[in-house]
Length: 118
Image 1: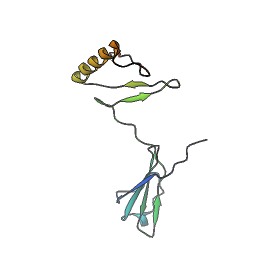
Image 2: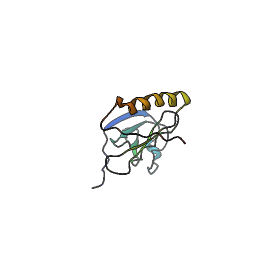
Image 3: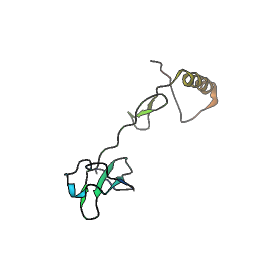
Image 4: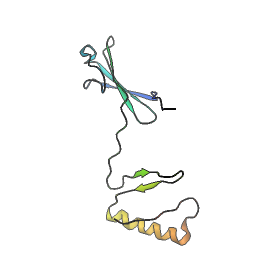
């Protein structure tokens, strides 16, 4: 069954423009914009002046920007995850220390990892 979006929380902001994905209704402009957030990260904007409403469509969440220390997760098989991270030189040096401790038995069990240098 497909996911059905549901507003988990709402933020009220000042009007900033036509609601994303909405048919423009200028009578609803100039008041407030209610932004609904779904648990999956999608959001929907609704402009309102109290009398007129301009409701947008649910928009998918933007993927996080990648950069130093910002991970990207992908999973290929059930129970596996590949974590891709861009690190600074200092972060890489610290990761080498952690990797050595792991190889020496510092952490056993469910976590297995391999460090590939690109």
